[in-house]
Image (cartoon, rainbow, N blue to C red; front, side, top):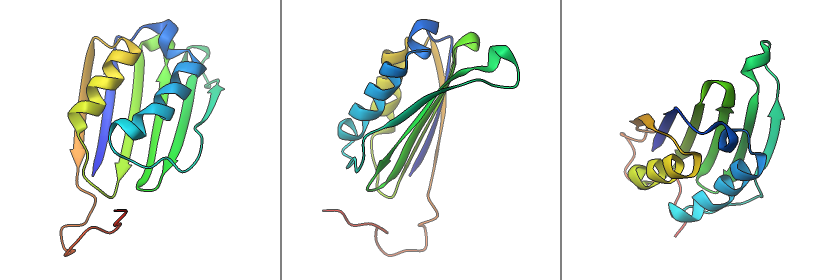
Length: 125
């Protein structure tokens, strides 16, 4: 399962917070029943245009990964949750919306190319 979340009109102070991005990456795996296998890695970056700076981070989970990229000057955030097992996309979307003060979100949920398999590619039970 692959969920891509695009958040719009977020609170700039939240979107520029390295600590908040870290905390979300630290807490989200457990909230969606995933297994974090390392601490989150978060950094601030500067884009080619001055207004394209932001915060990016990721956390590896046993099921795959979660990444976040923010653009505070634009009020945007992009979150990517990639997993070999099903999880509540709605719960993840609402959590991200609340944490970053997003007024609008859009998302896509994609399969992970497992249609021809007889069982999950990872069995972590």
